[in-house]
Length: 128
Ligand SMILES: *[C@@H]1O[C@H](CO)[C@@H](O)[C@H](O)[C@H]1NC(C)=O
Ligand SMILES: *[C@@H]1O[C@H](CO)[C@@H](O)[C@H](O)[C@H]1NC(C)=O
Image 1 (cartoon, rainbow, N blue to C red):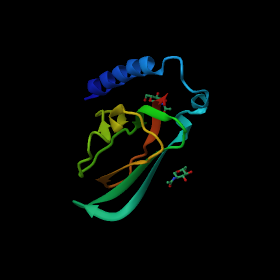
Image 2: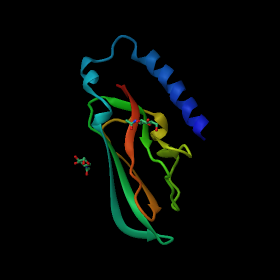
Image 3: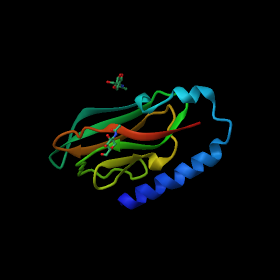
Image 4: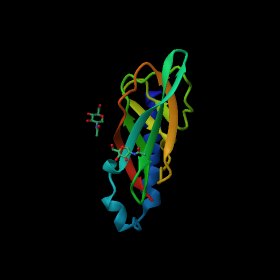
């Protein structure tokens, strides 16, 4: 699964280079990983004895961010999560939105485990 994520990343990286051409808008240059926020909150529901957590990934940048990868070491869930929203590499990373660009619309997903995992942005690529 890790290899798949890597392949997707590289594929999208080259696609990104092609589509960006010379018209990358200047205001996108101010966007960075710091514009991505991952918030986790408790919903108050338990699934198979585990706490259900709601995660919201927000991009506060005017431009899109693609290949959004979160640090999510040790991630586990008893509640299946749609892999097109969150795909766990099996080690340290989670790929968001299948690597496709993420714009202002927040992405949310729910998982269930004893404790919440600390998920923070690891890398992304600015697109528009
Ligand atoms: C998410 O967390 C960030 C940083 O703590 C905070 O500024 C932001 O308001 C939170 N967003 C939501 C939707 O709760
Ligand atoms: C991304 O992950 C690598 C490997 O775990 C780590 O060395 C690096 O500090 C991480 N970067 C961020 C911004 O979390």
